[in-house]
Image (cartoon, rainbow, N blue to C red; front, side):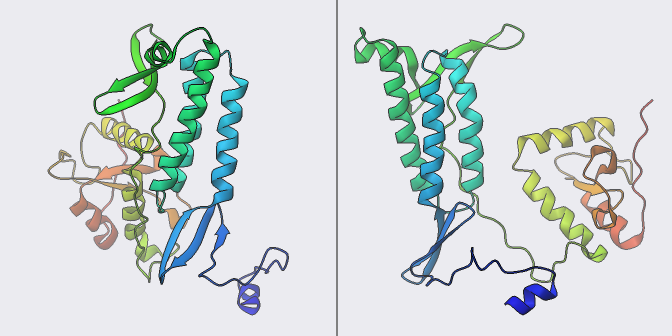
Length: 267
């Protein structure tokens, strides 16, 4: 192992390296890797879970006098980021337990603010029933334009588990011949992210809904691919200026038959 790492320009840290039995498991990057009855399961590590709860608890404790909507705005990025990181692994039980712990902390936060009120009054003020979900920590607030909207705490238990998709064994990200496969992988990952879907909307609008190769209409029926004009393997960036939407069939023609994708110029 040391010889191989040296060959690719890396060194093994003796301080951070240890040999363990996979049945006993080990922690790495916030996850615990362990075999249970011969089956490998990857879960959020206990240290990671405890550290995250301490951070959330600290925010709740510090913001004893904060407005409910301000507290939700502080907590939601933390909860969403932690959930998104652990979403690919076996994390359902950890999400459910963490949500219960945070609920208890918020309940204490709410009760402390109104010591003279009974539990039912506190529940109605800070928690609501949304469809089939009870005890939703949320409130009605206003946006920048002054329009009212419902703001609620991000639901960890409602986070959908999505496994990492296996990458083809012979795939090499720096092989120009496999650039199209790499773009497909990236597009699949992007489709699960709202910010990336907004980027596609901007590209679609800038192209007036037309394919950058054949100039025909892009629709849900035709589908589309996100193509890099200058390939990433040749130093092309992910900026919108280097990307266009093309039909899947046109995408194949670009990579295999030399057709050109032209970035539209707005009037």
